[in-house]
Image (cartoon, rainbow, N blue to C red; front, top):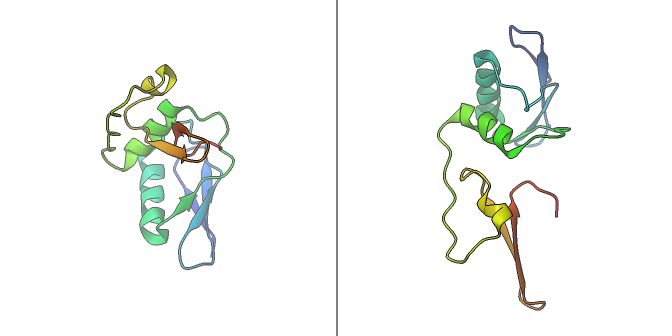
Length: 119
């Protein structure tokens, strides 16, 4: 059953359950834009109901916009400080952005990139 959410603004978004045990797609919302309180509440309610939400088609979302969006749902964890020196690029990321470490023991390399970035 698809749910349409009227957010009392110019945009309406839809929550489409996956049909599986958990999960739903959220369509018609641009996460680069600040959420209204009604939008944030509707997303939080859908998250509570479906456990996993997927926001497809989010293009050009900056890490700062991702942090702002995520902050609507509570205090964000801070990533631990690495024991080794990180690259300047990774050090500049907001502390709320968690890094995904990839280790290839055979090739002898280690990389880190923000979670959610393509490999």
